[in-house]
Every structure is written in C-alpha cells, then in structure tokens.
Length: 338
Image (cartoon, rainbow, N blue to C red; front, side):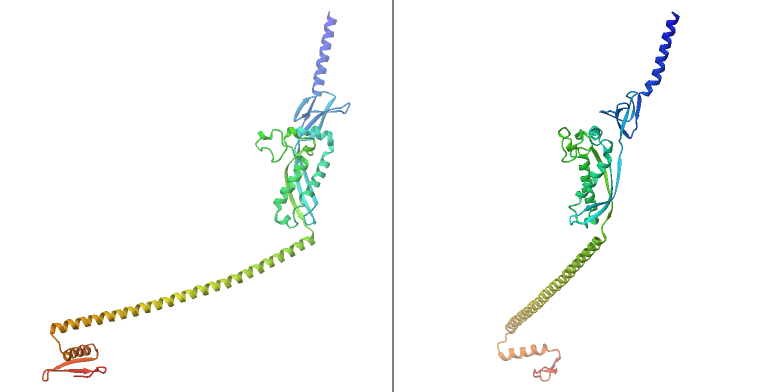
C-alpha cells in the first residue's frame, strides 16, 4: 500500500513538474509593433487563418510566430526621376509612410511573403513617374501642393487599391470618395494590401539647362507684361488727356454760355428798367401837368428843361430875383444856360 502511494505521489510530482516547465514554453509573445502568424518549428508550415496582435499567446511548444511589421513603414526616396508634360526629366526627393492592413495580411503573405517591402517601394516609384505627366516643369516651383497631392493619390491607389475600408461608413473618417464597397472587392482591387497614410514631397532638382530656359522664359514673359503695362499706361494717359480736354471744353462752353445769358438778362433788365422809369416819368409829368393845369407847350418845355438840368451832377441852379430868371452854373454838357 505504501508503495502504491509513493508511486502516485511520484507521478503527480512529475506531472506537476512537467506542467510547470512545459506550459510556459507553450506561450509565445508578439510585440506591440508586430502582427504574427502561427508557424510550426518542425514542419515550417504557417497557419494564416488568424492574425495575432500584441500579447502572449498559448500556441504550443513546437510552434512560434512569423511576424510582420505592424507600425509605420518609413520610406524615403532620393532622386526619383519623373517626367513632366513637356517631356523633361526632374529628380525629386520624397518620403511616405504606409501600414500593412491586418485584414489583408494573409493575402500579403501568400503573395509576397516577407519580401513585400522592396516590391511595394518599386511600385510606389512607378506610380510617382506616372503622377507628374500632366504637370509642366515650372509647376514644380509654382504648384508644389498640387503636385504633392497628385503623387500622394497615385501612391495611395497603387499600394492601397480602390477598396473602401471595412465598415468605413461607421467611422469618423468616412469612406473615400469613389472607393468600391469592401464586400464587392476582388484581390486585384485591393492593390498591394497596404494603406499609405502620409506623403511628403522634398527637394526638387531641375536640370540646369531647364532652369536657365525657364528663367529666360519668365524674363521674356515679364518683359512682355512690362511692355503691355507701358502701352496700357500710355493709352490711359492719352485717354485721360482727351477726357480732361473734353471736360475743360465743356466747362468753357458752360462758362461762356453763362456769361452770355448773364449779359442778356442784365441787358433785358436794364432795358426793362429804363422803360419802366420812362413810363413812370411820363405818367408823373402827365399827372404834374394836369395838377398844375399846364396846357401850353412852352410851359411844358420849360419844366422839362429844368428837370434835365437837375439831372446833371455838375450843374448848379440859382434864381435871380431881380429878373425872376434861373441862372445855371457849371458844365451843362451842351445844355444852354438861362
């Protein structure tokens, strides 16, 4: 009986020992910057049915993980030769960052395995070459943002394909305009199974002869614009002088017309004044003759003569009481004295 108990205790101890040793050996870790597929260490066979993320996972003693990079792939390209719409070569520096899609990691593994990085980079370079064909050489200096956007779109489509992200309609970013529904996408529509999140265009090296030609073109264009502005200014001055002369002529005409109208009005007023005055004199004399009962023409003529003398400023009238005659002193202006 004691022998049996000892055997059970021995086997239990061995089992516990094996559990303590073997169970931890069955756990394998995946870092926070990795994705992993389970891989058999004996057969080298990879199980791509499940993608493992960060953490320690119990997958067995004879198995491990085949890992892929889960964080950003940083790609920096130097002196990539692209061609412009005028068939000139331009060298550019650029960089972009892409992430492997976890949902498509099985397709990436089955298609490219771990040699995907060089393939994706070469495809990105090819996409860059086709993205600038609609831009002129001078656009690389004037419209950098438009060119950068065009290259970003070309690289993103080449590496990421035309498919919408899964459940993108429920995300804060929404679905990209023109993308294909994820459920209807084929493998060809998924591109190279990577999402390009960022793109930066760097230094642009335009050949010296192209720069000189562009500078000459710009100089000629500026000279042409300067000549156009000079001609426009000359025409503006001529037109201004014409308008000024026309306005001055109109002002002179208005002034002369106003002067003539003023003289006419004044002349009419003076004539009217004299007519009114003369009529008043006539009416006054008529009343005076009637009041004095003057009927003799000599008396009327004498009275008119006296009135005429009184109207002269340099004539002084006096009365000789001896002869009862009126004496005239001073310059009578041709009027005979009494």
